[in-house]
Length: 210
Image (cartoon, rainbow, N blue to C red; front, top):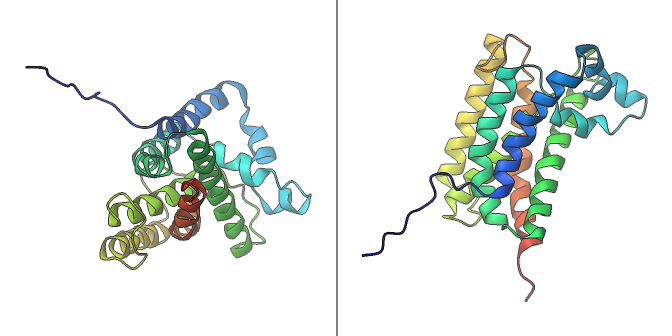
């Protein structure tokens, strides 16, 4: 009798890339980027006022500590797996996945800036992008491999849990993996909301033409 062995770890390439970018990226950052350079590449009202719009994207790929990077890396790997499988492993699927991840992360950061136009702080981290992956994964789980209704019980339940967790974070002022740093919980909620609406659009971009 032939025994078919499934690989012990079979996450799609895009999901592995998310983990590598977050964790590997922070490893390189910790070796080569002095802490005083973070404000230059993180998102802030000051950078935006100087027309440095690229920091909306560069901030997504920076992290403040190992706990921060490892938490986002683990969550990114988990939530990216169903999204990457849904969008497909071909070149188009990888491209659309990259756009979904990066644009949702950048827009979540921009939304935080609109809510806090006078905040002097610098925002870094992939939390907005990872939250968008969580929302996409929720809709795909609700649709059993396709995009399910936005008001399906599973999506509403996960969205409610996401809201409660982040409101508790706002009240308590910290979260696991934050290493004591201030948590921009609004970015998590904005990223999740963006992901809910962006995942069907991403699916249309990868759907075969009739």
